[in-house]
Length: 470
Image (tube, rainbow, N blue to C red; front, side, top):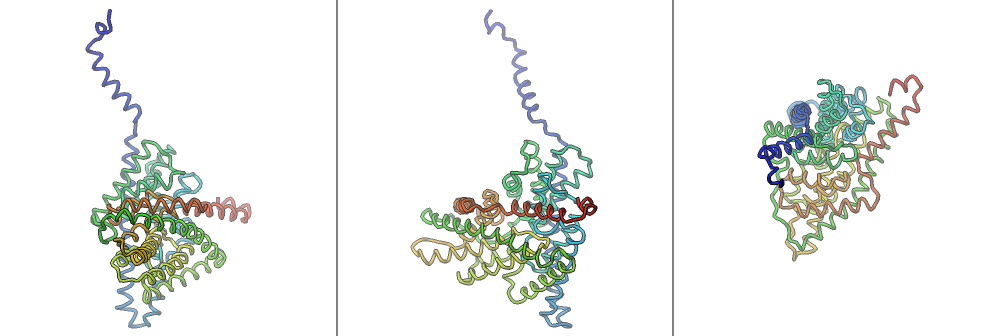
């Protein structure tokens, strides 16, 4: 009997059914995990969005109060100093008194938690990071809100795990990562960058699986929908839309990337250098810590009056720079000045991030480079603004070592999709040269420093206190 004679019509029905069953057996995604990731994304979106609105409210209220009320009683400079010092005091006090892990960016804490090396005490991190961040950023210090939103997003992921009594470690890990993605998506209105940040930058800690990738995507999208419902759908940075640069100018973008690769290694080393300086100054004594932090915040209140370009996160500065009006010399001076102010603020341990200050620095140097290139090569059609955008992505790539995230983040923040090729070239040059020089990614560097300091601190404690600290 031939095979054709053995064939039965019922066998045809089994083929698609068996294929579907086989597919489903490979993709058994627990619906509960995806539902929880939606919840994590929604909460992260609300917290991240209202954190941004809160920072703007505190900053505007400080300015109005300064002009309309206090300036009639005290000299303007003294009032500015006292208000910013008080706001900074709130941030430093809450961190030192209730949640030391809320100091700084917070992203290394989430990476450490994903590796199982750091605890996530969400019940104290969330209020301290939110309120303390409002104080520190509202005082005018050079800090960004993205680090806090990533840490708060991760804390929300762990909070949801605890509230729903999640026992599976992989699910806890997935929700933690989902919260981090949702936090970044809400910080910059950049859902794709939020996903890529977890997948690329946190790749040593992130547990890749079909479930975890789906959850991260869902949380990032959910968070961004919440952001857009509250804040609207406009890009975070309002700036010109540039055309793609001519092919014969692309070598200049590679040169810019090389320069940022060299600077990125230097920048990362400066961060830990300033952190060590502040530790030597306050010696982890609360009174010293609060005094140094308050004085620093007060100084930035004065700086806000006279040189506002050297204060705040730096996002506000990007549209101003790209409109022109600054010479290359002034931009380079501001670049050097903001390096110092960034190091002072971030190195002090204030609850704030370093994303936004890096984007501001990249814009300053990139636009200055564009102006110099335009004057050196007048035969080329060079728009300095394209180098400003490329500089944003290049410094991020050189310091964080996540070039794809940096490229997508800048494109989503500025809506300049035609600049993807120069962004890739600049980011690639930055990453390659940073790696050749042996620099370490900034968040890995900060995590290693935190773990090392904790180990040394526990060795110095008496046995009873050591047990309590752990």
